[in-house]
Length: 349
Ligand code: HEC
Ligand code: HEC
Image 1 (spheres, rainbow, N blue to C red):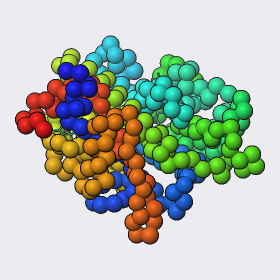
Image 2 (image 1 turned 120 degrees about the horizontal axis):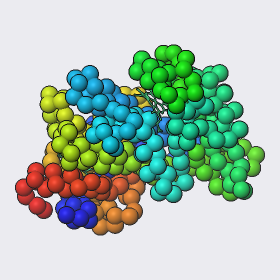
Image 3 (image 1 turned 90 degrees about the horizontal axis):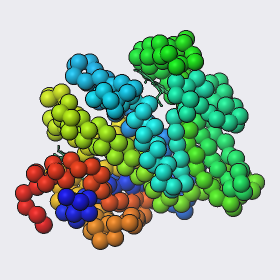
Image 4 (image 1 turned 30 degrees about the vertical axis):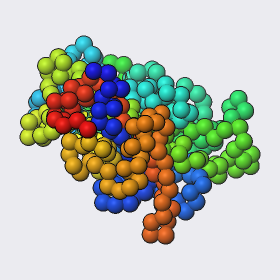
């Protein structure tokens, strides 16, 4: 079954939007100037989306399955029928997103990398990292001009949040640093946003990004996480009969469904910030709660089903504030999508 067929079958869509319109609908930027988003705010949202995927993968998948002794994560996951490490999940996802060539790029890095490809690679990034170490409460941000183009860059600290971060890195034969402690900055997430040739020469950090460009960036992260999770975790491990995905993953010691992975990330973001939200919606949902909850969402779903390369965007005023939202098509990125939905959906539209 091809992905196109699946898509036509379900017209399922990822709604990434900047608004909080209704309960369970998503998104949200409380920026008063809908004409544009300051790069620092855009990069905070991008980081929130990356961090949500990293947290759900580490906590809900890796830590939970390790604690029940069901399945472990290992560096050589491809040969060992295991889960990939959280750092590898982030890097795989960044690779997919970066290769789309949409402008925004991100990666995990550290001055003490186990994998040399994660080294800063430039004097500027080393200096930026130094600043993060001095003040780990804040990301360090700056603006650079390269080849005539302006870029906004930010490094967000990546902390040793549990003992396993420390013990695995300190004991890894390739680790150049052996004395990490709990709470230390172990590395950082680097986000790079192109501002263009004409970013205001004097204060490029005040250059505003179009909201639809920022939703493209956030969507790219969500879709990349979704692809890595569906393909390299769910499909691979199911095919090799190691573990399966189930709607009742908690009770069954299983993997959450791809839709539940995204939903968990969205709930986490919702808890952490009130100005950004996303959710999965479909015109023919398995779960009725995933149906369109307003006219904008219905029109968006219908539109992307017909024009799949163009997100459906709109603005709305709510509580005296302007919000921006966008609906993107959700593709069947792995064979199991069509397989499972095909067996669950009985009546076709
Ligand atoms: C079981 C071992 C293990 C655990 C647990 C682990 N890591 Fe790693 N980490 C690695 C390996 C191996 C790499 C290199 C992955 C690659 O090939 O890119 C890595 C990569 C990284 C990097 C990128 C720089 C580098 O070293 O290549 C950071 C930052 C990082 N880990 C932080 C963490 C944090 C924070 C935690 C805890 C939340 C953690 N790691 C848990 C093994 C581990
Ligand atoms: C093992 C079965 C299974 C697999 C694999 C699976 N899904 Fe689902 N999917 C479900 C179930 C069950 C729901 C309803 C979850 C809920 O309660 O919100 C769902 C929900 C969804 C939704 C929200 C609308 C709805 O139908 O409720 C979309 C969109 C979706 N899936 C697309 C996909 C895509 C794309 C993939 C592959 C990346 C995929 N699914 C893989 C079973 C599956």
